Structures are given as structure tokens and as C-alpha cells.
Length: 237
Image 1 (tube, rainbow, N blue to C red):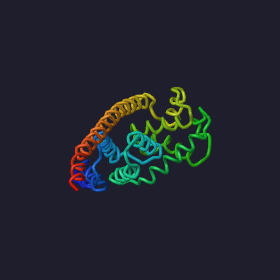
Image 2 (image 1 turned 180 degrees about the horizontal axis):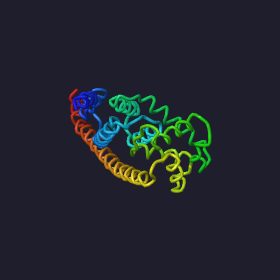
Image 3 (image 1 turned 120 degrees about the horizontal axis):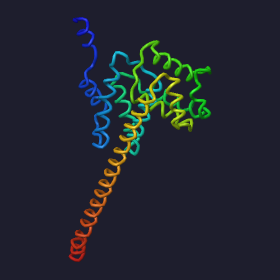
């Protein structure tokens, strides 16, 4: 019992991870973005410190896909990259590794031919070996923790290969030893999240445009009100 308590003492709490993120990125984040970021940060913290968690490139691709969709349209590209770095660093992982692995998988998948993406086990290569390692661990030959980010990464592979039909998704899920039912369920949640986020962004865009218009009208009104004063001063001279 004591050993378990000592072991758990080394694991950061959700509050620790949130605090680490705030320390790493101190600028304010618009509420439409910050709410979702905080939500997925909590979810990923629980995954990250699960006893069965092992980093893998498909998981990384899934998170990168979610993040890029979430932050699409963010006002400043530099800030968007800084938030990504702060987020992953707060989880004590490597943001550059996430990005490089995501690019590697996307490039590989883009070069695959349709349903051939599910036949990775019969071929040799860097990404093929990554996928074979995941399949082995998912089959019980090591630790593997299925998650929503993994499902999204899997679907992103199929998108890049132009093979996102249900049949190919089923083949790839089977090849990786993961449940297609779980993948389908998590992809539905992901699509709903994106739909709500899109609606929120539209509302934010409309609000921003209204505020800009009001500001322009106020500035225009102030300029007009100062004209008579300027004309009076000119006559008195």
C-alpha cells in the first residue's frame, strides 16, 4: 500500500498539468479556444498518466489533427504554435516529436494506394514497422492504451490515402487489433466537437465584425464632431 502511494506521488495532478500550461503560455486565449483546450488537456492528462500509456505516432497524429482543426483560424500563427508547444510540454512530452511523427505518417499515407494502407504488415519500412509495433502491443504483446486521439489518427491516415470509406477503416482497425466499433464511436464524438466548434467560431467572427464596425463608426463620429472646432479655430486666426 505504501509503495503505491509513493509511486502515485511522482505523478502530476490535473491541476499540476494545467498550471504548467499556464506558466508556459501566459497570454490570454479567446474563450472559444481556451475552453476546448482546457477540456482536451484534462482528457490527455488522464491518458498520459495511465499505467498502460505508451506514446505512439498514430496517437500523436490524432492529437495534431485535433489541435490543428481546433486552432484553424486562430488570429496569430506564432501564438498558435506557441500554445501547441506549451500544451505538449505541460504533459512532459516532446512537441517536436509530435509534429515530426505526424508529418511522417501523413506523407507515408499519401503515398499509399487505397486499401493497400491496411496491408502494412506484409511490407517493410519505417512507418510499417511503427504500425506493426502498435498492432503487436494492441494484441497484448506489450502495453497499449486505446484512445480517441488514436482513432482520429487512424482516420487521418485514411484521409491522406483517399480511402476513408467504412470498409477500409474496418480493414485498418482489424490490422491494428483495435475495435472498429470504438473507432466509429470516437469519430462521431470528434465530428460533433468540430461541428460545435465551427458554430462557435462563426459566432465569434460575427461578434468581432460587429465590434470592428462599431469601433469604425465611433471613430468616424469623433472625427466629424471635431471638424466644426477645427473650422472655428481656423477662422479666428
